[in-house]
Length: 463
Ligand code: NAD
Image 1 (cartoon, rainbow, N blue to C red):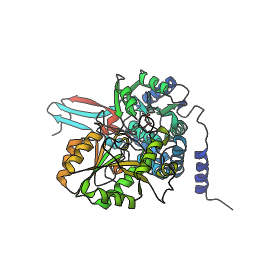
Image 2 (cartoon, protein in one colour):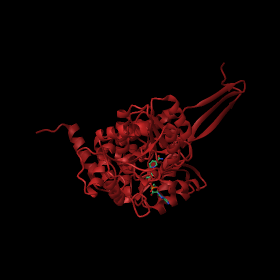
Image 3 (cartoon, rainbow, N blue to C red):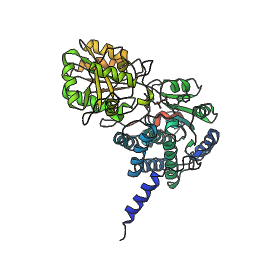
Image 4 (cartoon, helix red, strand yellow):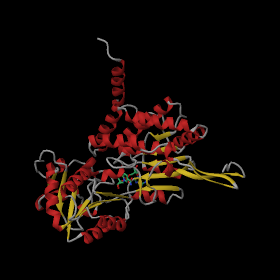
């Protein structure tokens, strides 16, 4: 029997993608030391300076293409859950696909121009050089895809310092990207990493003279570190997104949106709904509809047992439980999970750990308040000044406007799920590096660029 060549090739690719492989070896953008990795990227950047914009477009297209191969999407989604022990395979698939398809490329680098009697001046987005990018466990591959596209589109080379927990997968991904770039004719080593990611290697990267810009996607510790590096830095830090529901909202829709958003990738995204602030008049109806949409309401005794499992002695999230499914948490407290359960819900006070802390688990506290003014005030407090993400369900434009003004978050989703704010089912491009602390917002190619002015004196004004 003859096999169709396209199917044969797809089968071979699938097998190669699954090979546990070559995480320990070097080559294809993977280096034994951080110094070697940065030097290789610096050399690649110099070669990249001679490439045309059309070349850049081709290289970005090659990254998208390799990351969108079905066997690679499957591998990244399955292996991320296996290696980090967190998240949901189907949701990781969606996130990886969105990162590869919807991250802006070269087209994002718009040119500004001034012309007049004195001539023509252009203002262009130009490369920084070598960027050091630190990536989180929660979106390991999504961040590498999205940063590679944006940073290369802007003309840079990038050195990745992934979270050690996602090491094998990150190393695998950097190799895939390098091979695809080589096939597209790009300089070698535009995207590199080290075989053994570690905090020491991250610190060596931050301190390296050839690294001109640092981009950190992670928790408060690493954002603080890069902001005190003395270099141009982008900090994409933690959030604790509140979702407010007032009495004018479409409650059935709000309930479904909250369950969808708060259970997305088992609540790992920094943008996911982390606590609910609901006006008393609709709180019971909201909970009723959330249960219909796949939430399980914990009673007081069950809530206490869940606290015992997922919080440590300081009342902080227990690391081992981050990103675990709702069904596993129920099983751990001896409750048979109902079919299709996605989220655990409970009423809680405004100072309860399920409300105050970024749990990154499909467990959400609901705080009942008398009216929308109290809801907005509490939401602002619970967001902790992260200026990250907030969500509101309301049909009252004044209430929506007031919430947006008071909370000042980088992303404010109205009448939708949190993930609609990063281009998944909402208008706008995608990113997995949301820079609240440093203000770039949803980062894209132009944020990884320097602004340069080029002045031609006297000529080329043709008006
Ligand atoms: P993390 O802070 O533990 O790790 C992030 C990265 O920083 C990893 O590569 C880690 O190795 C490195 N790192 C951490 N501390 C370091 C230190 N002291 N020195 C050197 N390197 C260090 O975060 P995580 O658990 O991987 O990810 C979850 C956190 O990231 C959450 O707080 C989440 O909100 C945040 N996050 C933010 C965004 C965003 O776009 N704003 C996106 C994803 C995740």
